[in-house]
Each structure stands twice: as C-alpha cells, then as structure tokens.
Image 1: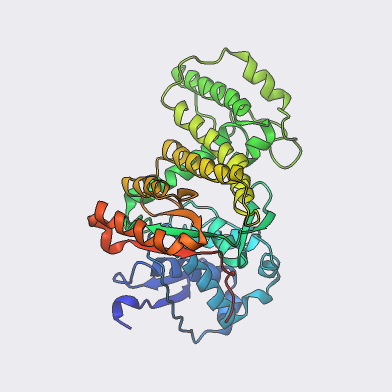
Image 2: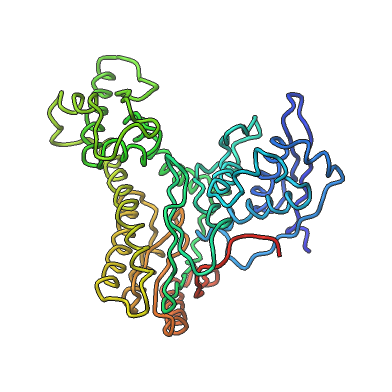
Length: 422
C-alpha cells in the first residue's frame, strides 16, 4: 500500500513503567486511533505484549467514509482490540474476559481506550487521554454486541445493561445519507472543542445536581422539571457566592443524599433537594448560563424517556404496521432531530437539509445522528422503495450542495451482526 496509508507504531516502556509509543509525524490521521488503543492495551496488559515482542502487522480496510458520523473511529478501536486479542490472547486475562462475555461492558471498556478514562481496575496510567474526545461507549457496544436484524436498546448509566432487543420489521429499511461535510474531531481543534463541550455540559449539570450522570439525576429527581428547580437554585447560589467574593465549590452544590447508586427511587426527590428547591423563589428571567443547561436537561429526558423506547416500538411491529405507529415514528424522529439542533447545536446546514428532504420524499422518519457538526442522516423507508429513495435523495442533495458532492455517500442497510472473527 501507499506509504500515506501505513503507520508504524513502536511501543516501549517509560521511566515510570507506563507504556510509551512513537509515531511518525506524517502518519495518516486514522493512525491516532490505532495508536491510542495499542498504547493503552500495552499499558494495561504488558505481559501479553511481551509474549508478542516481535510485533505484528495489522491490515485495516473499510467502505465507510471517514469523519461522517458513522463511527469509523470507534470501528478502528474495536478492530485494533480484536487484532491484538488474536495476536496475544488478551481475553485470557480475568480483568478483560468478564466484560467480553456477551455484555455491553465490552463497549464501555473499548470506549475508555478512545476517551482515555479509567475502566475498573485498568487505569489509563499516564498513557494520554485517548484521542481527546469525551465520548461515551454506545458505538463500541453496538459494534461488538449487535445482532443481525435486531435493534438493541441499552442503558449505559448508572448501570450498564441491555434493556431490550427488538426485531426490525422485514418491510422496513434504513437509508443513510452521509453528507460529505466532514466532522474531523481528531484533526480539527474547533470541531473537537464543540463536540467535547456538549459532553462536558452534561457532566456539569450532573455535578450541580450532586449526581454522577444525567441518567442518575433523572432517576433521583423523577423528572427534568423537578431537577430543573434545584438546578436553578444551584446556579443562583453560585452567582450570589461569586458576587460576595466566595470561592467556587468543587463538589456538588447541594451534596444531595441518595443520588449516587440505586438508593433513590424514580419519582422521589431527596429531602435535602425539596428544601433547597423551596428556599428561594424561582427566577423569572433565567440568565444565559442557565438556559443551555435547562435545554440540555430537557433534551436528554425526551431522548431517553420518549424517543429511544418509542422508536424501538415503532420500528418493530409486524408488516401490517398500524398507521398510529408510523405516525409515532415520524413524529419522534423529527422531534429528536429538532431537539438536538436546539440543545446540542450540532446540526449543520447539510444535515438539516437532508432531514427535511427525506421527509419531503416520503420517508417514514428521519434524523441526523452521531456526534454531529457534519456527518450523516438516517431515513426509514419501505423496503420496496429503498433503491429509488436512495437514488433520488442522493441526487437532490448533490445538486443542492455541490461543494460536498464528491464526499457524499448514500446507501440502504439493515442491522448486521456484531464484530467477530471470520
């Protein structure tokens, strides 16, 4: 292959005992993901790499367009793990064998290779912050555990588990429109900053509410509306503290009891939260700091409580799909797309146009997906219309956005099997 498609990654051990690596400055962009996975695996499992000290060659091939919101970067992470496992027998180690026993925890571990976070007893250990993206592990879980023709509904926080698995109706097909508007997180600092800002915003809301995640906050308070009351008071107190010259608290503002773990029950607000929410009148005109946080909180609740279970139900009926379910599919997917545009700000002109055009062409539902700031849109259509829809949608888009035409890519698909050895 051309030298621009080859990356030589040399692993070693630093003075502190952590894994180190060397990668040529001219290495291709995708090699950053391979490098992050290899360095972390070498740090966590040095004995495995010692057994393969002679090194090994890995060939990667893909028909997915890069930086398109189609999880090509996560696919590289997963592929590198599978290659290293094949070469060194990683799964013989107890710390890694359990997460890969048909559990979505495998996705969480692989997500940590990419985002640089610790995983249980396997710390990053100074190997860097992955590739610098503060992402989750949904893509990795899907790549490793999905099944042909199935839609997987999984809960990731506070407890990682599969909630349900439904069959996609045989008469329905996804058509994916990749816009050609590249969202190059690993190479474009601006895109990376915007992507991470959306992830960090969710963490900030959870921190202010004294919870580990937004999912835990909803579980703890019962609804976004009740959590919003406390969030308003938290920010009011923080602003007042700053005006008085006080320090900024590093922990949760309220330090709410029952918000870590499963002690709280859905719909039940801790006593401390009730008293905090009632101490001061609600602010009539919220400031610029609060508005985006409230939008994100409401969007998260809508996406997790309504969109995900609603779409799973609407996509899985028998061929004689009731019109009410088709209406729900169209309504929920459109509302999800608009909520992302408002709360996350990650919808660009190209993906906004693709979603609108898909609806105009008669799709049963459509939405942008992935990290956004470019990327792709999915549309659901009857199977017998998939080919004509794909051609028309693609042709219309290339005419409307000639600057992205050469990089755009349209294809029809149904869920396939997870990653494995051929």
